[in-house]
Image (cartoon, rainbow, N blue to C red; front, top):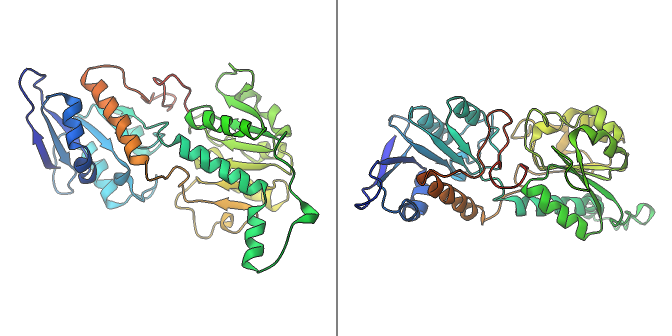
Length: 351
């Protein structure tokens, strides 16, 4: 682990040096703000180095660290950062840019009793907009129109005109930052919304145990929940069979929430009208997967939340938590090892 910067602070403040593990990209962007937040406390910015070792007290896993890595395929820079955290026996807290903490590294850290916080909510507006865009594209038959355009064919779909969205029913699984924004967007289109959450505490909400009751009258099943023991493989062949054949599935949660093989079979068998999938059981999605070519299925490469403004939003969350950590206050979006659910200290239910 290579030293990047040492700031000795000023007198009259907490004097214990903090070693902060950051990427070089994040260090250049945040060094000045870190000094402001720590209010004179001495700190050292350190970077992972494959041939070195050294302790870190806290770490910030910024988006550039994970890069194009997935849960199962790690780029060298990602692995080096993870190894640097493993080589820090005194590591007490890690913040990640992601909304969830279901990557194996975070499970490993939690077992070491390292505190883990997420950036749940930072990309919620973008993800909600993407999910709504996918819903509108499927509702207005954009996949069929795009195919006709590629063929230079003038097909007005008059014989199979899409129904109006007003009065249709959307079942939103998860009522965290994404789910809450989605509900507002859907209701603005006069879509009837039912929310599935851990506890049915609002008039339009049902508990997970009642999901089967809602599916037969669902036009749009939207998955916006975290991956937990409760939601893993939540939507399988049995539940897909409860949906009307005209229904669509939208997944912006985690790939493991939906059994892909069962969805493929449902679409192929005419039991499901279509889907938008941004996340998959294994990423990157295999080039040989049938999902790429299924009619009326839109695939995106886990990019529903990508936006040029994400880094600034995540930085603000981390800096706010850094200030809290320095003052020994409760951290926002802290993950619980048992449930694997973040956003426990934000006043809202996890996604």
